[in-house]
Image 1 (tube, helix red, strand yellow):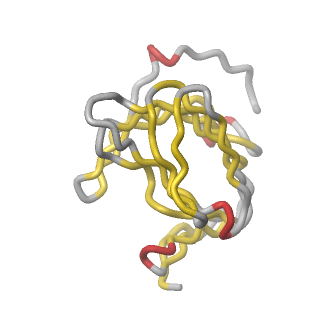
Image 2: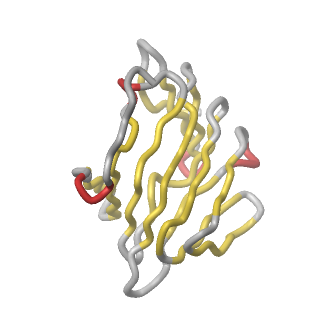
Length: 144
């Protein structure tokens, strides 16, 4: 990190992401411009929504810590029920494929998403048969 960071989640402004009627809010803890090795975000999911879509990384690992609520994580091996206090580690490659969904009827799901930020990176989007390429010069989604 370039600087010492101290933040309070209650004061962080969230970015509402809307993809085809599915919504989730991301509150950035460690912005990309502050680090070359890791990132961290609070993610908030209202009932019935999911975050980011089903994907896996070739290079970067992710760890989720469920702060509140309950949810379901879709993996290559099937669905996993998660709740407050659970920690989930996603390895690189197809075995780390995941998407988090809040399947409750009235409770918000909140979790911290920690991850490494090595570039270049290729993210696979199996449901769409596409890949996302992230590098210093190229960022885009392409057919597989």
